[in-house]
Length: 405
Image 1 (cartoon, rainbow, N blue to C red):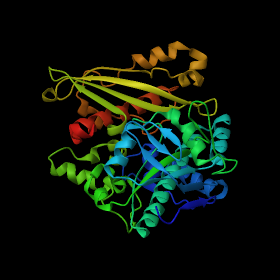
Image 2: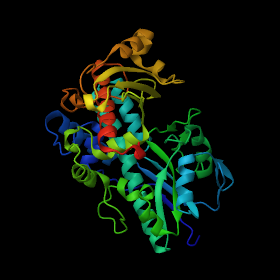
Image 3: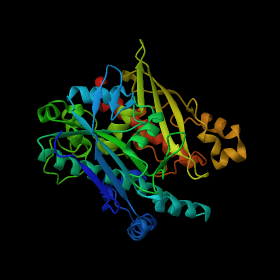
């Protein structure tokens, strides 16, 4: 590959889009904040502008070898079937290794707010940190697209450990490959694969000389997931602006009925939901939710949601639903309520079955909390998550073809 790339930006500019931030907060698309919520959102932006220190690092790999089962980057092997397929389909000639971080400052401030019993400030800071990471990834992708276009290349969508078909355990190896000094004194990886600070991302962007393949193969086009609206290298519309019209054109339900934005719905439906249809038309759906504890510095946790639905012609009635910790998860044991109640909390979570017996469509009109923390300590937070889960399953069944689920 020509024109070696090295990008180090220890003071990256951050201009988080309001709607992207509101989506992460759990508000429906187009919602305008007011009152206490508006005050908190403005306070969070002001605080981060004064104290936040976002970081970006990217470097081009020296060598890429794609084997029958693994990918070798600069002598380090990774196993990810989906990333491998993406690189093979595009005949990728290399990759760019990227690290972005919202910085440890916002995490420390959120933790301080929690200790001071200011959960609202904690939640708005947490979600803004996530929005910063999304924004930095988007803007880095845009800068990489500009670089690639200048050398007659094209960029592929980014992919990260922990995404479907890429074990989070590879986070350690990817971090070592990127380099501990990529964002000096800031970035680290725990044994579990969790990044420190947690509002960070390690990613691989494929690079191909075959721009026509990126245009032809929709699953390789990064543009549908990129919100950088003014990009001159765009090859496809941003999915959030386009999916609703396409769905209406197929005679399906208007996506404006959802509280979640279509980008999140489409991504979650593709990455977090597994659906199996039985011979009698009934459906078993499995959704994986990844969150963080409200104590112990926000340790990661994972829960499985299993939902059994009746056939489509009956309106997908919810026959059974249960939420339990994902196999192998121990993060739930660090939640503050678990530390007080133990397994009684898990039993309570498993026993909650909102909308049981009702048609799946009813989730679109269900009056429930619009936002909630990443933990499971409070019933309102659990209702909020059930809403996200059922909306995502509804979207997967009514707006996505079988090949995309």
